[in-house]
Length: 458
Image (cartoon, one colour):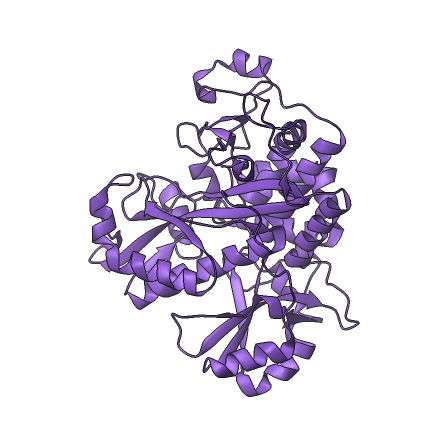
């Protein structure tokens, strides 16, 4: 996040422009996609000659889609949803993206509408749009970027194996994965995602890709496209990509770090030259709000059973509700703005690849705004590993461990009225039903068996 805001989707595309672009590029199928409560990316594809009707009316889905856990396609009754009832996924022309890894195919992300043409109360994308509009009404433009880690795996005689056996950032890993990494970068850039960095991470076969930031809704859209692009390219190379939080017990977990800053009239409001950390009073209150709501946010940013195999001390995952300058064991890392005010931002390390990006970012916005409105203070920044402090020292500094299980995180969300308010009652109900259903189904498995269930879901 080292450049000023790029105005992604600043000028809305027209349906005619989308059709013309698709035809000129030889597109024959257009996927209309969404991300569900379980963070699965689902789509229906329309032939090009039917695109006009799809752009106008959308494609139909049963309301039960938001009652489905990652485990299968059986609706969970506690969601309040059933196979009776229909909603329509209407594509957003601004998100039209040609998929270079799938010849003749493009994709658009959509918004769910009811039969009356109203936003559907269970739609995660509508939830984030609402959160961004609330921030805008308070005078803030939220800029964000998701920074995912993932494993590249190849089939082997004993199951899927990492494509290399190296450590963080070693050059041999760049060479071992050169062809697929080059294809990933070229593909993501062709998709308009502006790759900033790509490098090997700590686990064998583990990599990280960072892309440029964008306004909140576009940032979540771009993360969905990134996941699709990485997985599509991996398949083309005979590999599989896994964004699961902790795919292997003996190897590093994969985060999906959320970078965020607040802007107004082209100025980064989080920057203050006179502060030791270069943070403004607004930034401190925002951090305090996120920390205050972080136990409940865990149900959105670390929402799988597998998340809690990663979210542990000494794992660089942010297992304690704390913040500090370049502190990779704190939940919130304050980024050093070496490139000046435009690069000032904070990173939520707790977030992982099982999180629906729309809901994760909406929840963080609601929490941060609560801190700003109440003028909360986060306490002193932490410049040591929080797990190196005694329990008494952490209590004295107001540093609490984050939930230990998905069940604990769901309980925290049920107690948090601020996060529930941004979701709305219907989405809160269906979301908690999905995640609690996964918790109840998988809580008895050992770590290796639970990891297998998540490996290629995310």
